[in-house]
Amino acid sequence: MAPVASDSLQAEAAPAEAASALNGKKHATANGHAPVHTKLGFATRALHVGSEPSSETGAVIPAISLSTTFKQDGVGNHKGFEYSRSGNPNRDAFERAIASLEGGAHGLAFSSGSAVTSTILSSLPPHAHVVSVNDVYGGTHRYFTRVANVAQHIETTFVDMDSDDALEQRLQDAVRPQSTKLVWIETPTNPTLRLVDIARVSALVKRLAPDARVVVDNTFLSPWYQQPLALGADIVVHSVTKYLNGHSDVVMGVAVTSDEAVAERLRFLQNAIGAVPSAFDCWLALRGVKTLAVRMKQHGHNALQVARWLEKSTLIESVIYPGLPSHASHAIARKQIHPQAVALSADGPVAAAGLGLPYGGMLSFRFASSPDSDVASSAFLASLRIFTLAESLGGVESLVELPSKMTHGGLTNEQRRALGIGHNFIRISVGLEEPADLIADLEQALLKAAKASAAVAAGGDW
Ligand SMILES: *Cc1c(COP(=O)(O)O)cnc(C)c1O
Image 1 (cartoon, rainbow, N blue to C red):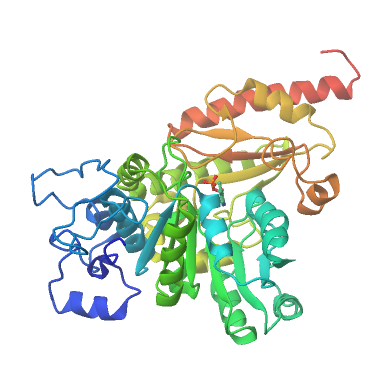
Image 2 (cartoon, rainbow, N blue to C red):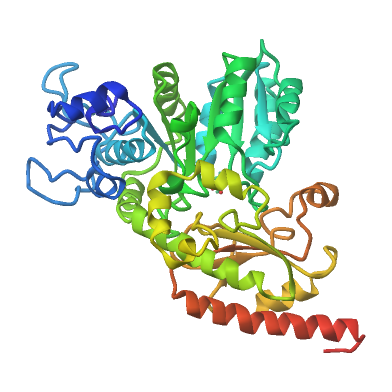
């Protein structure tokens, strides 16, 4: 059993801890380090929670602890670790850091984002019912419909969670008060970047099915921009593979909750199922998290500049970025964004001019051409020099992809049409390169796309 994920390091969501932080009361962490308490800012906690200097050696950076087992001074008398699947120092450090950043009491790390989904679903009884946002990550949809359904007879109802007048009715129709145990939200969705009002859905769910837990997949925004627990969610999950690690070199996942019963069950399953990350991956991911605040600010800044530039192009039918005033759910973005991220944009010239706000690094757009044609998309993707054509997202380098044939290639034509993902639809993960270089790269590739389209329109061979 890992040491109790040191409550002293948790953030504002735990009232008792916040109170003791105010009182200046000292807590000791599992390793006896001085606590980094809750009143500290996000960037400070990202750097110091889980990275307390070693009381043994003074090392400022945690050592990588590869030992699979830990000496006991007498039977059951140990320093918090017994066997590395159940808990180890590097995983414990990472779990404490993310719990602190999400404002939760408990963090639980897994070998991938998909392993988080699998472990949470494994916590449900057979024949349980799940309600999920319809535009959910493909792997999550696959797990609900082809694993949980087959192995546990779990049924999932997919619901459009757009925040319109009919939302309450749609949820009421979907929820089964007796058997709905889980409501799964993802916001923004992938790749169409629709937003769900987490507070509104959580409140409705609490009324319709008091037993159901609300899960939010926070992969696309990270706790810098969005902290679902404070908005009413019970569990927040991440593919650490994306922004939390941020360097495209670790596959990992994490769940955070302040619900003691949920935490206890997930801790049990984390050990029992054993889909746990390696000590080295935890070490790398914690290293990535140290720069989360600066990375996310810059991702948002760069993406907003790119989005605003793309909006001016006549070759493009629509740019989808929730930080743009033109986005259908821009009001939800403004309401739901964590104040720390707004404070940043308020003193930037872009926000001051009322031209949008940084809201993560993901954006999508559609070429002004038929959704059945990939002529413009193909020429565009082949011409980019800085953007790398690849799946995944959230790394420091810019990536671009064609969802219809890559990440969402597994959907039927009908499903893709319903979601608006044609062959003219491009998804970009805006990295940390100079925005001017990114825009110049997009500009030259868009010209090639225009030429290709014109050549086809003229029936010429090009
Ligand atoms: C990538 C991703 C996942 C799955 O995570 P893995 O680490 O790839 O298993 C889940 N949700 C979202 C939103 C993702 O982008």
